[in-house]
Image: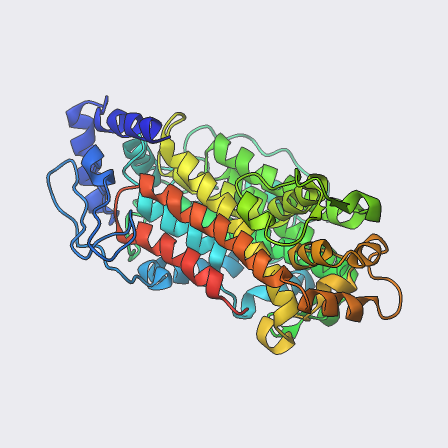
Length: 498
């Protein structure tokens, strides 16, 4: 892995573009307000460590070196991830609702409902931080910069005529067709079509980094996909609360909530196509499929009691053997853990992993460069750790803290990490899991068994193992404030209470 990373850095350093092209790009980038990191050399990847800091931690004097010989601002030991990309996050937040407008006011209201309540915006944050941490490293960085200030710079303009995309929208009468008469053929216009404005450089937006407009739009798309999944989940789970407010199904009804989620995925797909990168479209489309697969797996999951426990000591989680073997001689079978962690990946970690990989692709990373692999490994491990902590909080926190009903997993018949670990210490948990806690008193008994076991602590250890691995892979990136911010995200995630 280390050797692969060094090769990738050397490949980046040996730029194949003519110097005149690179200088032209640099001038255009500077003129339009996108700060170019420059190609970072292999020496920028070597982390410096001071006494008292763990290996790989950025020192107080750590800095990066660009190909132009310039040194960046020293990396701070304590970085606020949200403050680092605050202007871009604000842009994501304020412009997101504009992407959700519909001719139907009810649909617009439901689709934008969750965006009007406070959220952590973790997924957009990760997209933006990886953009900041890796932009300038990939072999196609100059090409992506040129695209960002070229004719594809305005991501709000459609690739097809508005009347084809929207059919009829009373808010856009000049661009759509009503149904009062038969539809007339529209003669094609080959040169400068009227629905696409003549190119004018976009107005520079104050940015905290060299984050490209396509990456900011990706952050919005990721949040749209996430919220669409929440709309669907709240219907399936019959949840009454979300973000300390009535859930969309409670406020508007289940049917309209499902349709609003579908509508949001449609708008996200249209925005995704305008990014102009087939690999990114493929990654994010797979995320939507993964969300559905994970939900179906959760709904259909049946764990027979006899499948659960073994005493041969051979059933372990790869990479976490010491965590899984800490209590008693019985072990929850490998198959049960595989199903649980696969479902966790599909429903939670897939979106984080593939969205941050997509962000690095939009920043110019080529196939064979390590930057995409770092992003995916980080997102996958962080996503699993995030959900494991969420499963812990379902036992530890109440509605006021979580912003959603506490203890929901057991009521839904779901056996998560704490219950599976408790099963190893208390075999009587097995029949409860098999019948999905359906009988009167099952939920209370299961919670008591978890409390009398080390299930919560062992689940936290498992989450920490994944979080530590996420931090470990970051060491392949050059030292920077953005890399440190991604480490801080891991640390804060393990301490979160909601």
